[in-house]
Length: 410
Image (cartoon, rainbow, N blue to C red; front, side, top):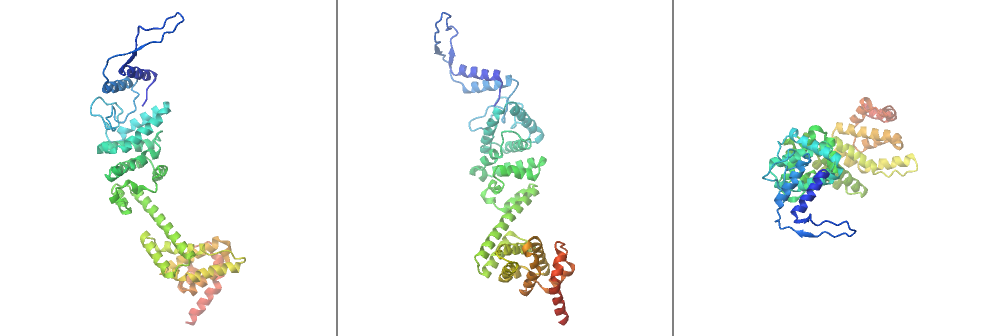
């Protein structure tokens, strides 16, 4: 991949010698004002590609050893490793599958690329070919390539954009044989030794793989469960947790989108409830999270186009009354009812047009049997959320007094 001017001239000379073409030393131009075009003649010498390649490697070695290699010598057709001849001292394939053995090669290449940036594209092309040819290497050799690649990213080696590594791996035959999963696992483990999970996600995103990690898995193992099982076994718990969070967010987004559409289209209540139940089950959503989501979606769907406060109040109260059964289905205990009150409190505190609606919304939720009397009294006396609390407690006093009087009469 690299050589100085002397090496480059030597290569050219070697090529012409082996290409059976030369210039006769006896045919020289005269000095009499007339230029005589030199004639070329063929030298009968058989073509010898092996000798040519050996000569090229030797020229590199003779010129200060400036040779950037993976295999350490001449590769056979299909980029398979050589089985004969001497290896270069920086051969990645020939060293131990350990970072201490491979890191010097990465640093060596880094120095070469800084001195001669024109080789960056060469490294990119070579890396792409190696990624596409994983099946031509033995398991131990693939591990070395994975460690090299991880260290290259850690060292921010020029010429290795993430898409150069990740995209060529997605060949069906490589993925199907499990070679890609094995390679990428070794890559993840080595990269996370010196880098954070956020750093790993960043290069996956640049390589357009952040949302497609399951593409590294054979089809028979391509599931969320298979992902968790594999990387948990490999000790990559943070990656498992990240993927679970990602899946959760996708399912949560799907639920919100579906519910928003159903509310806008005034879908039958029973259908909406079943749809929410199914998505809650699939996403394994916590009950408290479900209550928060339902309230946010219901309020987002309100048409806040009233010209005055009362019209906005009527719109909000109408929404509560219309979808009270949905709220009631998922507010199944005092803890969830209290969480709903906190959601109402926060929304009224953060939205100026709802500031004065807090007691009316609470009263409506009580009338629709969504909030129990005990829940309201508990919030009034011991509520822990401080935002706007003093204002809302004072606004709710008349209703609470009415509840207490009704309780005494009973």
